Image 1 (cartoon, rainbow, N blue to C red):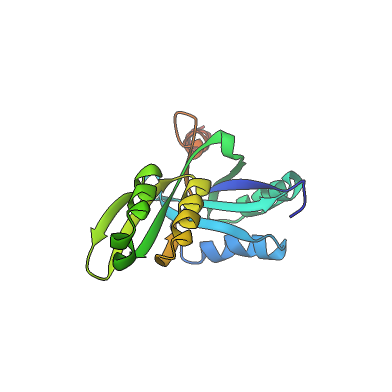
Image 2: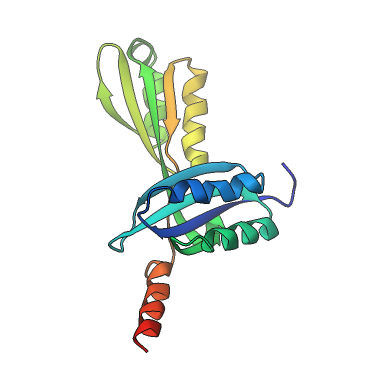
Length: 182
């Protein structure tokens, strides 16, 4: 990875229209930028969906991508951020061998030390869940993997909120509504 590339998070707001996700991801494809994670959900504004997209890029490229996404008809607003501008979380799920977890108490100590929680135990497997930032989720995976007990592992896409008081799109929508009334 080149030195000038950083991990950026784009927050994109749109109406819930079929095909908009394809239009958004196509912008990344055309610019040959790989999406690291993608999470789509309803936002705090009724009828508006929020896309949280992470990608390694340089600032010039991410500005161009953001502008292109914002030009899409059904996109309301798009902004890019660095990690220090957001509150970020992910979830990691780890499926471990019950037999190995029971034989080695160090596995349970590692889970507790990493502030993860055991959410299910049965004779075949143990499910562990960890909330946190990407590095913490991956670190727990690496620690557990050293014990040879990991049967499956996955982590969610990033979810993020800005450090401001409201969704950035709220101000945009208020201004747009005011302009329509005037």
